[in-house]
Image (cartoon, rainbow, N blue to C red; front, top):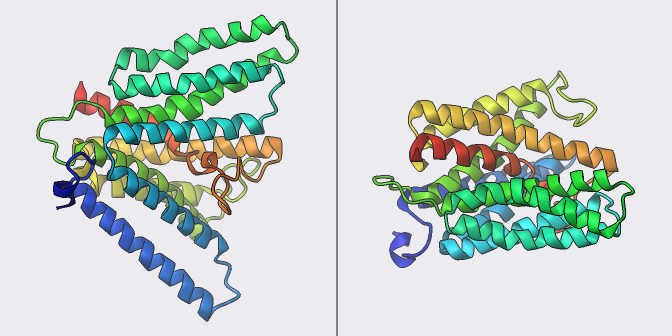
Length: 318
């Protein structure tokens, strides 16, 4: 119904239905934790409440995006990449001369998202991994400062890949040519990706807290366990199978895709955890007061977006 009143939005009946279910779950768990805290004031619910509040923020932002057209949504994603890149590079101790290279990194954002918006796969896929891979080192060499230059190359190239190239895959997904007979639309693909990625994080946390005993990466993320990882991935795979109506995937393809979202979501999380541990950081930023920075919220998405876009492209468009 809503798509009739917002004809240029990303809303479809499938997307609207799933958003309604997510809203219901958020209301239920927020109420549950509130009552639980009143009945048992000593119960340690802070982490669960923090994650639920983060979900409310992400749900609100995502729902707003669904009401917008693709162009505005792409601009919003570009701004998200800008904030994430700024947070990441600000945390990693760049040299003063690297600021000039960093300006070029910021200038790459509108170009990368323009290629995504135009569905120009050729330029989209090589602009940062190939063209900027060659441009950035030359820009650094021009300064004449060679001290720790290899470290700067690595930080800036990797930061671009993680915050700009990866997130631009979501924008590219939104602007792919609609598939004939696929009623959920590209907004359905976006919802499937974001919902599974974030829910995988929550499920791994719940499984770990409930049954976790064996540490999976104690030196990187001490709270993560094999039980949490396996329980979360398998649960995410099952949910992905039942939500496949949001995608053009077959049952088998949905299982493969959801399974890889679960695994790569975990990978993105622990990679950022390792960096924060290396630099002694609790959060990458404070863009979301009380919940850390944007990079802390999209760490898993920076990995899953790459896998999901290319899998869907391979399964459905090729």
